[in-house]
Figure 1: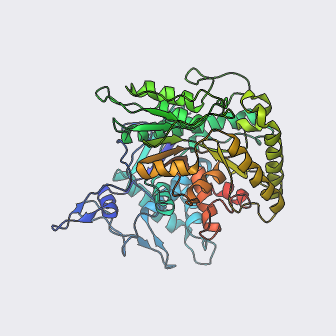
Figure 2: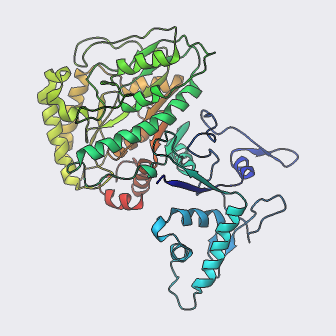
Figure 3: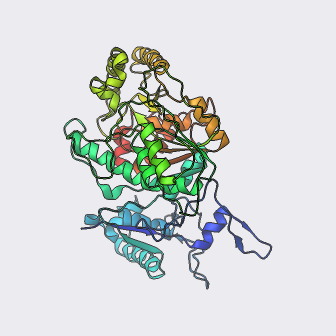
Length: 489
């Protein structure tokens, strides 16, 4: 049976109060939010763009609906607790279907429901009336999601928080609840977890393609990384026939035989055998019908050659990786492209696994101390320091040596492109929260990325880690708090 997505939608007039100003006549004047504006998606099987964030507005005094049909307040309980009708509805529909009733809703909203004198039945009726009132006024949005839906719903509340906390120009956070969760662990059920990760990146790529298409200008020089995120983004980047692109396309890293997730050798029709930066650049050239040329590297990542110039690049599409799960450098023995650095990779994997075991994280998000952007590898800040300081120091030396032997774009290169235009990162899944958090919080050379597409679970883990770390680097506590974060998601 197809899952049903339910959300409580805030009145549209309130949206402009948040992003806009008031005219002299007192009317709300709509203004654009920060960053690029995406095409309207209300007609797509993913729901509405209308922001319905949990942190939207603080309601005023006692609640009622005015003559224009706008909610002008909230309900105050006898415990001095303020209840927002939208919060009530969102809490109700977030309950598991098997336990979704108004009695359970009361328990969720009132920690003191066991106190003497608490009238459970009366509050069931009151909260039920609030939810049904929103339903009758058309403020509860129901969407049936089919199994092959590309455009899953979004989480505007998380998107707003990401833009604020990490100074992003645009963030898209995709709700992947309908994809479910695999059984077991990546060790015991590796194929299921790999397939799950692949499904996530397909859905992220659908929104990434819309974002890229909406931001491209005809003369832009576009730089491309490799991996599933950039590949699925480019494949979903659809532009109008009337627009003729003339900019060149520049790969950001040498060949490293990057494949999609397929341990059994079976792949779907829309998936290529390789998703290296060169392949992604060729795909984008075809999708845009560009009159510019592709500056193929066509060399192994360990061969001595020069990276094509990115001095004119104003747009970049990249992925963010983590040395875990099915990452290609976890299976480096099979790759001829890295034959000259196999000993280095073996030692790097050994040290990374030692640090992972020291953290003791066995449930999502899975902690991995090494991440990469465009095959530029880094050791994430802080996490694991206390338990494995010596291994971390040795790991940093190995990562630095590995980067010196790879043909790849540096963070300084991405920062320059971000300053000229935009760097879109498309990444998510249970293995990448730590790496994405590092990229978001590292601004030593300037921001590495300006736009991000990720999933709601990864976004929640990163934000929780940032809160737990007291405002320091967002990935600092992901390892030690993975179990509690997984329960909260």
